[in-house]
Length: 123
Image 1 (spheres, rainbow, N blue to C red):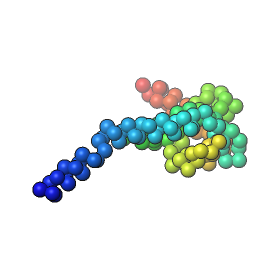
Image 2 (image 1 turned 135 degrees about the vertical axis):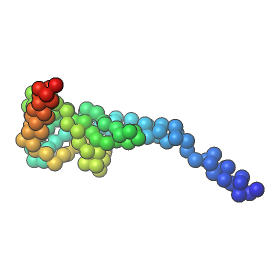
Image 3 (image 1 turned 90 degrees about the vertical axis):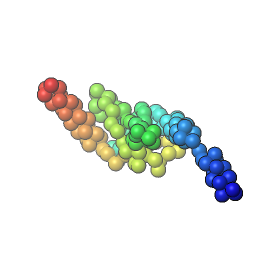
Image 4 (image 1 turned 45 degrees about the vertical axis):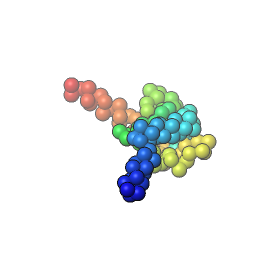
């Protein structure tokens, strides 16, 4: 009887999936508040953009940070995704550093545009 009672009590004390999800949402909101609008600097190249959002995985964990590229790097101001593993250790810092220089960012955003144009041409 004691075993059955302790098993029931332990199940009652486990967080519900909804509770776990609301905890994840609250944590994501705190991270979003910390990161939104922070400048993003590339390796030895100065400012390349600013944090403009978070991308979440299906389980609502943060998968990546969305960076809007500065106009001086690409006049179209595209967005690039930075892996969360690169950004997470930098929480609380006044800026975010990525291992890209401005040339790499310009190339990546140009390639993305070319790929989109290729996709449109195939339709």
